[in-house]
Amino acid sequence: MRLKVLGSASSQGIPQPFCTCLTCAKASGRNQRLRSSYLVELISGPSILLDACPDWRQQHLASRFEFDYLFLSHRHRDHISGLGEIRTALEAHDKKRTQFQKQRAFLLGSTLNRWLTDKQRDSRWEESVQQAYQQLLSRKFFRQTVLIPFKKVALNRNLTITYIRGRHGNNYCGGLVIKEDNNSLVYLADISNFNDKLKSYLSKINPDLVIAHVPFFYSPREKIEKERHAGVEKAKKLPGKKVLLSHFSHRVKLKHKELVEEAKKIDKRFVIAYDNQEIVI
Ligand SMILES: [Zn+2]
Ligand SMILES: [Zn+2]
Image (tube, rainbow, N blue to C red):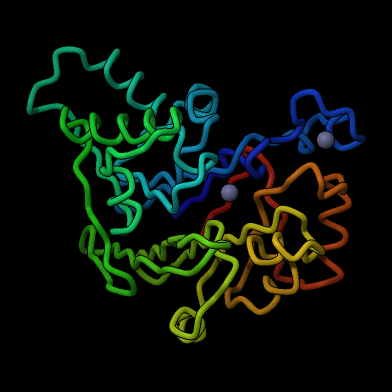
């Protein structure tokens, strides 16, 4: 399988609009980051998009990728608000939709599915994301597969996925284990608290690559951020032959090169993500 990093920043992207900090003001090349999303292309055919970030359109136009499945990890804006753009694009492209046209599938947990189909919301962006999700389903652009935690699902003869679940501050956050033949990848999204079940599950597997989100690289100092986001200390305890660190905030205050050097000192398995990076697994 092949992983393409479509974006490697946290919720604001780097540079962040209006910000004059050193990280933002001088961001170019690998120091410039769109919001996080990844494309996993499988040898057996399908491809899986991991999260629909607000930069989906820009990412899509840059690489013109296809996808068969869209995994949604949790309800935060930087992970699902691309649904509005996906709806707009598909509606414009497939105006006269027939039953023979491609149908993609959402992969998500039941908590997020419930939230996306709950109409009793008052915030506008939530409403539009929920509306996009519901319309993509009702117009049959997508079907949905609600995943049960820790239950393996076969997508084809060589490919299985397993939904995993942990906490991200006060919210649940889902992750996905993708296994094709003998190769495997774990997407942890924003999971920062690993309960016993998740810990024991992870201790039994030795994936080729784990994607971990560490917006500040080091463990955050503020209590609230500590609950919400993992840092390298937590990432060190993760299994995997390689651990891809991603989802960086401008508050990381380190250039890509510096992140690479720091990471090397902490754990040889660490790889620092950058936009358009491709990793063969
Ligand atoms: Zn996030
Ligand atoms: Zn900044």
